[in-house]
Length: 395
Image (cartoon, rainbow, N blue to C red; front, top):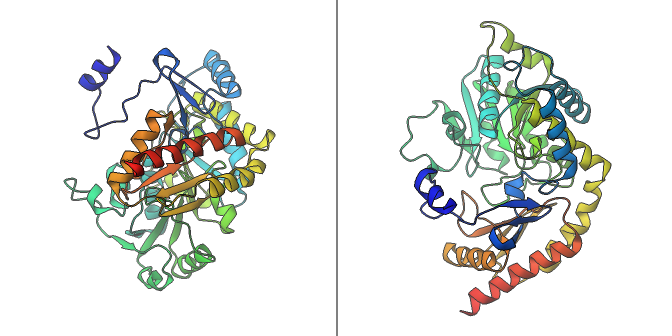
């Protein structure tokens, strides 16, 4: 019955969905009918960073639900979870990234960040990157560097140009007309592409030289995914505007764009209420996010990541694997082509491992497990993937 309703009434986004029925989730596992279970090696695409059903998060949601849900639109009344979470983020991020605007999703806060950069600089040109992905709303899609994802949706934002990631010689396209450069800390949908050493420092220097703002998209990399709380800490630089979502809400919808008080203040005048959201920074989501943030710190989950990353690198060796690339607990396993990659994904699903591909490349699978996964569980997940590879390649 649920399957029939799903395919009849829930709008589909591809000709073939994963299609498993999830009845409950706990830890690294999703459970379906008759206690069928799958290891979720994707963390719900970098959302469930401390696993599914973490007791601390569920308790925080329950306690907040008894107090209030939605007293007023964003920014008008003081809500303890929202104020407290903003303070925690500001303390971690430091000066220059200490003013938080909460939204509901990654795409929504990308939109807010783009507006903020245009308003602050009084410029309209935007530079993004080939192979980038920033979301599916019109503004976010405009700065996404995959033309096949834009087919049928034009015209999009004007004055958006693209440069190639990791190629410093293209910085000359960033000039005095540029409002902002928007870039992912690690290109996620493009197949986990890491920056070269010193790349972000050079990019920030160029932006400062011409007066453009640097927007860093950490929607996938934020909240511990790379072994640091935020990936820019790993790469030793600081953007002008930081964008977060996915794991930020502990499994509930939450996004944020974060900057300095000086930059963010332009939303207050000419006109007032320069950026609005009804549900942004919902108290339930903020309460869940606080619980996630505290769990990462208190359980010292970041300290575990080097040993877990070592397992991924050591275990995922196979002639059919063309490349293994990533950082921390964010990896891409690259295969020969889409047909082979998709066959391996489906076989792994049969054997109890849930993975998924990438939006901008079609021959890779994601390895992005919860930070709470045990070493034994991670080895088991890798073994299932290797068995799936053997089954597909032998056939």
